[in-house]
Image 1: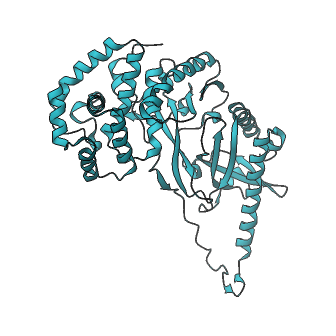
Image 2: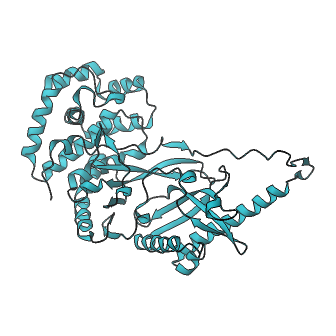
Image 3: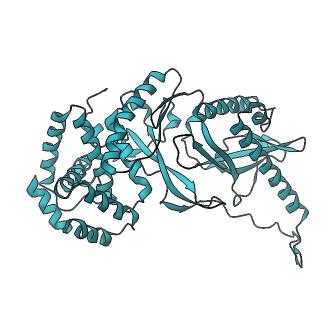
Length: 431
């Protein structure tokens, strides 16, 4: 086990970053462009009469869909020549990137890969990339074999160009249509190394396979505790531990860089892929912390991953306090009980000044990073007083419900026979 985990690392740096919308959310997209002025769209008995421009666009989009299907089929079947046949051969850099992406995805092992054009996004001209080059927004769905319980959505921006009657990919990272921010999927970042364990897969940078294998061992040590505590856990989990800055999207917690985040996997709930639900999470480690990350950090993030599919109605003090509670248990199991006791004594001094439970919008508030430690002691108190099963039921009900203080108050009374002021008083007495 590496490191002794300083207080900031333990109490604040491992916070969950919310990187997606609610448990069920509509996909964002542009409206279809309005019809060109003067275009003929006169309805008839057999349907609308399309203009020549509209007919040409429909043919183009149909050809793009054929290209996307061929791309996915070739990738799934492990046919590199057929995969590269969907890329513009005149773009040598793109072809080289595609070779690497193909190799990476095959190395990771995909149960399912598909590309779906977002129909609500109108193709946009990219004249710098070729005559009639068009950018479209793509939904890529990937399911890692043995890891992901369902396909995960990634938004892409592809630009297509016509070559000899076929529409080929000429740009796989169109910033304007992709709307992706700075972060990228690990398989898009050049060469990778993959390490596998029981229900865990770690992706690391070239030459860092040893660290990847170390993280596999740390993850395998953390999973049983998470499962025993939460009574739920993902069947498999992906950990991204790369040196590349773009594997990380600069997530912060309380104004400080996070040590790792649990990124939610969004899975479509309809054929059009316009609505989604959270089915799992992947853990992405801050590149600066990838060689120090250990089972305590992973236990915290795995706890987030286990609870995330329930919903997001739970208050921040419960979400973070629960993950901290699991993390400190992991430290105790790893022979760091003296350290945990010191932390507990220090945070108990903070409890003496507690007036209300930490508030969501200003979670750090008067306690700064100590809010995580305060939240830990709240959850620990509830578990010791009422039992893990009752706390889990309390968490589940709040997570599945609306983000409503009234519902939270009712749940406190239902499960613990306490109002918030009574809980605060009990915490201060216990400290």
